[in-house]
Image 1: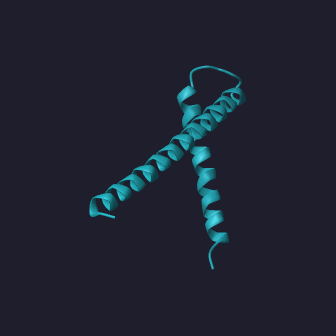
Image 2 (image 1 turned 135 degrees about the vertical axis):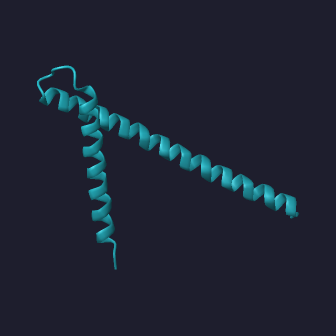
Image 3 (image 1 turned 180 degrees about the horizontal axis):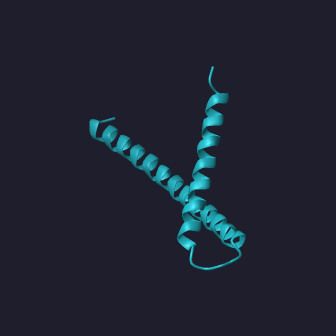
Length: 82
């Protein structure tokens, strides 16, 4: 195996890893968008379906979902501590 072959193999491995991580992040963003959208709609309905507070509903939905994710990560982290 030549040095050039080794470099080529390493570069290909890094490219595949980066592509895989990029796809995972895209999937997570899509799921988060759907979650936020669904929760914002629930908030809209809870307010009686009155228009005019779409941004507030969206921001509150984002905050709730991010807070829940933070609590989940913290809880999982605590369980796995030695």
